[in-house]
Image (cartoon, rainbow, N blue to C red; front, side, top):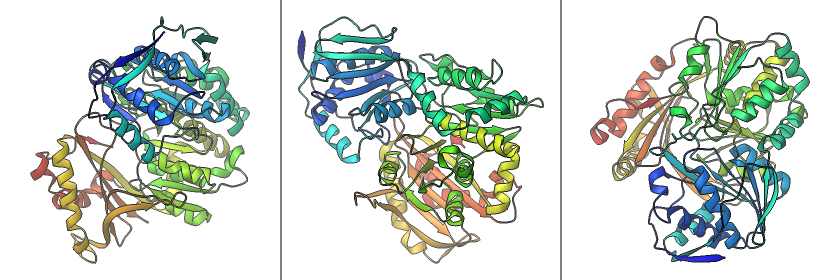
Length: 538
């Protein structure tokens, strides 16, 4: 009943910062998914092991999960724990891996990328830590993918994933679970749900946009059914293969429905959104947006308000591209502080060695050591807990934070769809320009340091380079980085940070204007890409 199928390699199965992401039609090519999955199995030797499996419900999820189950059985896996109907958020998957002490897991998701037949599909592989596999493992998987000649698959009917309970495929056990229960139990251990129930009982209002993605059922259960938010507080709660035509990236550009609600005259008290697989979040108040960088800093500054953290936290880490707001909090609180490359896997070593408790990225990802992934609903519950404890609005909390620590005016400018060779040449030529800039003036800004960012991991002592940065004497910065989450071409991301102690109420776009012009001219963006402005600004 085990078939050994001959195949030929594909040469493009190199994992990025969060797994393999490709256009859906690429993954649907003959044996493409099977080749990649078999390459993982050939690398990790899954015989006798247990894995967690699920996805965000996007197009091809149902087909891919059945292939995964049959290939796991053929490759000697002992047990799979599968989300009901093949659904499982990334945070919930990490939780189950840790809670059940499994050997890892597979999440079928392209995260915040659009879905549908013409959208994107992705495969994430997590280890027993609950976090993404290391760069060394992903390189081994890539090497195996270039030499693969066959894959194994069980010849059997599809497995019924609609009913909870256990069943067998050959010698492998398949346990279908309610994906929400374990996650709710975890959140109840971290936050004071009684205090949050009282907040809603007093008439507090919110809107949560699940963007027709996987966290809809989680949000309904937690916010409406348990905490008592009004019915209808959760928008777009039903996961759909094409996300209902939405681009499930929780930012001001793509979460238009929620933004329009929160900037209306009758806006609710609080707004939030999650992305496709539930690991990103956006926070809004009435006619007020909180940048992800500020959100990480504010959560860190208020950790003592949360039951799970009231006795203290080890420290905090941010991706290099994220603004320096949280660094000022860490200094004030006298806690550990680390700056890492983009990619959640770089936080895992710091968590496992008790160096940090909180971490975050500017790309709307925030989390803590309760799991080994970023966690959108966790961040929302944290914000609600601060509001419940202080009685203050989102805007009040944020403005008081700026008054105490200063404000980082911070924007990210994405230049999408650049040919990969053009993007790589832009970055290499720019890198060569940096050393002579030290001590020089660019416009009205004095350069303190211009360099390639290199991270030396204090735990495994590995070294990783990730992007270029220019640091100025007043605390402002320019950062350049190529994104690893695009399914085609390259995205150049330019991050502009203008720091101010006293000017706290200006327009962010105007505040960063001079630095943006400096950044564009220095990198020759228009000349090299033909783009006169960013495709997306967040």
